[in-house]
Image 1 (cartoon, rainbow, N blue to C red):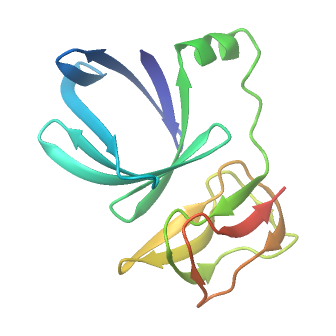
Image 2 (cartoon, rainbow, N blue to C red):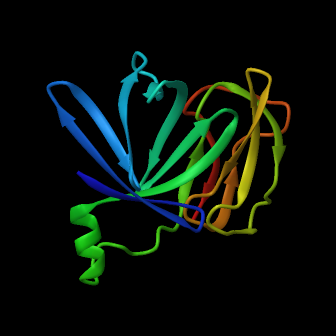
Length: 167
């Protein structure tokens, strides 16, 4: 299956092939074996890509995937072949606006970069969360106006807890 992944202003095309021997991913002209296993019921995955191992946290918000990898948070828009055909035909690719930003992991809120009533652009940093001695900047996927801030600096949060409501 072919996919287009958009992270920031960069578009990446990749193909994932599954067979009895396992799965492999092709990015450009490079193909590597891949294995992705969810750890329990959490949003954390063990990713083996080629000979490298990664721990990845993935949260889906509408059509945006928030990916936490090595302490950095990335917002990725993923479209498969069908979604790309629909977008090319003029349907199914409306701008994503509004969201409830949730904690991707337990941690401590160490920064809030927005105020109620303020405007947030897609990809803009909203909350900084410290988890496992690493700071993770959580960004808005779709942008909008901050309706409510449900946490304060210094507050401990649990995984999945609502942090900021954006409309």
